[in-house]
Image 1 (tube, one colour):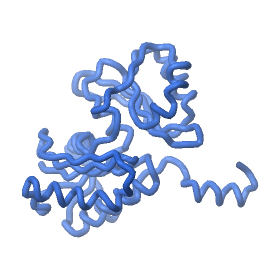
Image 2 (cartoon, rainbow, N blue to C red; image 1 turned 30 degrees about the horizontal axis):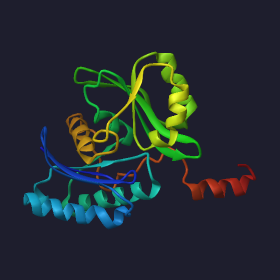
Image 3 (tube, helix red, strand yellow; image 1 turned 90 degrees about the vertical axis):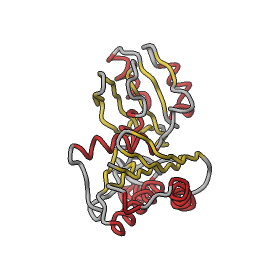
Length: 236
């Protein structure tokens, strides 16, 4: 089973090729370039490096949201185009779930946090029991205070990760009442390898889409849509 995976849900751009339980190649950058400039050149580099024939791919995986609206659109457009051209299924993996899956086997509960602006985060709460990941709070958009209040009530050690952590670090340190720590550099951002690994589990469960069916999951309205709604209703 060979999966080509993408993550463009944040500033990070990441492409990976996985075969069963092995990461054959991964190319990840965390730099201020638009994903329209990075994803396909990164794929071209991987193809050349590992002599990849895209026809050999069994499925395409993508971080399906939430995240940057522009990034999600570019990631989805990329896999939809490849899916149509190659006639391959798409596996859409929730962004926050994939981030948690990257902490496979953690003794602590896992709280990914993506900066959603407006003093909100895209987040969720997860734990592992041997090989099984339990989703205690499904990915959602909420205030930092709301998710930390829930964490304090659960009363378990927690690890925080994601680009929302540096933005909200002072609040996390002030409000968290349970033991906690922050994930190190190699684990604290999105990676296509994590998307692909979780996609492999989804594939075995039959959770696949056609290229025509796939759409990103934004979880909330875009800024333009919010502003239009506020203008129409006169509310903020």
